[in-house]
Length: 138
Image (cartoon, rainbow, N blue to C red; front, side, top):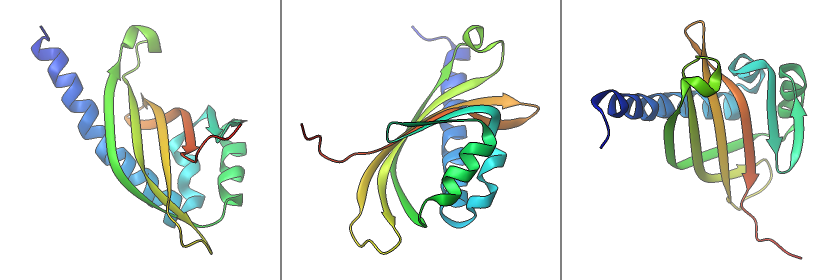
């Protein structure tokens, strides 16, 4: 049986996930030059199997992508034990939806998973894994 504290942590994770994803996709689609503020200096981004380490390299990678429009359909979140994250409040967030890129009319499904960490009163991305959900072919 979940304790009252555990339930509050789950509720907080869900509320934070809604606010965070709204901000993240707003920046990604409309103000991409601001996305670096959302990442830790040593963050890891895995974009469709390509790993990028560090805030500056992530920013450059994202700026090189074509303009996009993300349509988030679902989000889910859960707290991560502070014991696992050096006593920092952390959440795992999963977002799913569709994306269109410049000069493409077809929406493509995507899934994105974030681990965010509270640092000096702000949420920062520690890890970010983005994957287009295209059929797997062998």
